[in-house]
Length: 257
Image: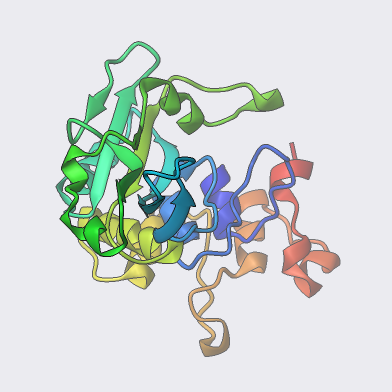
């Protein structure tokens, strides 16, 4: 029902349903089955600062920080493509993955340490480059409890543990928009399509074939839904005038049940 609402541009007014994030590809990511708890704005991936050591004999300390981007989300346990998506994330060279299948499943990590930030220190800025990242102990790791943040919320904000909980960490380059596009590309591989447009079409096809939705053939509204035909096909009656004049006011998901 949520997918139908998104395809038909129906407003989801429930406060615990958040599907508008403003990132290109976020809608396709969600329609494919990855439900993020949030898609935050990205913070700077790299910074260098000079701090006071507090000791006159030791002098200043230079600190370099590397940060990764992370997304917490959930997928269906009953969707075979969900596991294919997770496998694609594990194979991606930029991504680290931590997951658990259901509340009682064991935690699985794609690497021994899934980390979101790490720091290294030196007496001078130039000396930072000679300090190995692998030997630094100042690392923020993803812990098992972090998977609770990946659980979706149901009615009255109740957490749902019966799902595939995933923490995805992007250790590559780029901002959050680039991270989202990487995940959309993985979904494209899962559905054997070449781009986001074809992915959207593949996800929409089952609804069209079932007669629940119709695509508008007008060039002006290419790849949008013919709300009038879809409404009449579903309910056996023409839609009210206010719907024809302004399809965005369609409130099927919240008012018709």
